[in-house]
Image 1: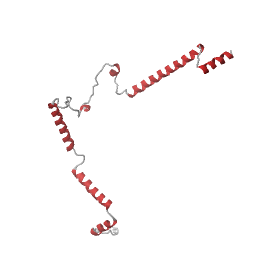
Image 2: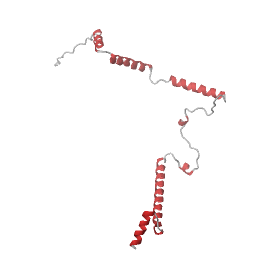
Image 3: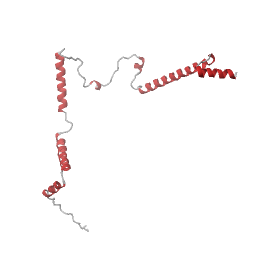
Image 4: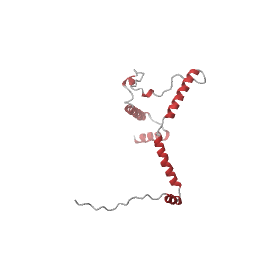
Length: 163
């Protein structure tokens, strides 16, 4: 019996021969592989369902509703006209699109991020900063000579009054 078992394993290892007795082992591994893949697919489906649960409605799952109803029209703003024309096929539509593009360009051009007053203040501080950056020690001394120190009244000690 031992000889038969050793001979069978020798044939399996050397010639990759699978005797009829051990075919059930090969089938078992294929079964395990398929069940593992099935479990993986099920887990992936659950994860995707959890990720998109707030987006996908029950009607969409059943396939009954082909349209999505949005409560807001915000997504429809700033769209172009539905009819388009290229290469002079419909000059009237091309003229309308050109006028709309010019109007949008003028609107964007007229918009200001900051007011003129803020821009003037920023420019003023920028000029002072750049001039200080490129000035030398000699320039600093000359500026101090031309600008006499402003006289400040020195504060003296005041004796507290006793009432």
